[in-house]
Length: 136
Image 1 (cartoon, helix red, strand yellow):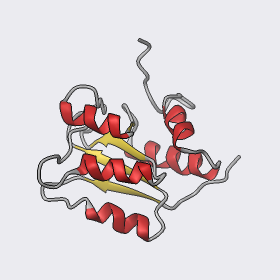
Image 2 (cartoon, helix red, strand yellow; image 1 turned 60 degrees about the vertical axis):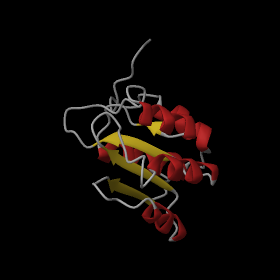
Image 3 (cartoon, one colour; image 1 turned 30 degrees about the vertical axis):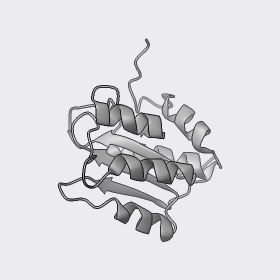
Image 4 (cartoon, helix red, strand yellow; image 1 turned 120 degrees about the vertical axis):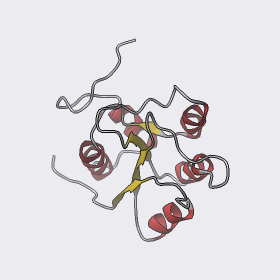
């Protein structure tokens, strides 16, 4: 099945990024967001609270995928407090997927009509060698 929903966005975090931009994307029709976070999945938390924004988006039914900006680093939201907070809000880890893989996987999942829980389950599935999943 080749149905996709290309109404997704890729956001590269940078110092000073304003989470309000995420809501502007959704207001413009974006159905899912992949965020390239710092390192293992660290994001702004104190003044410009990305974690709170992710929680709001997820409660609106918008899947948010956290990946790493680092070329040879995986996203592991369990390593630092801010990542664990993002997980509690419902963020989905891209693990070691490239941004291109994460975007494509999200577009396909949304094109199949998957809900948030189904998208999360799908991101915990290796379809074509795009992700290395921990076995324990």
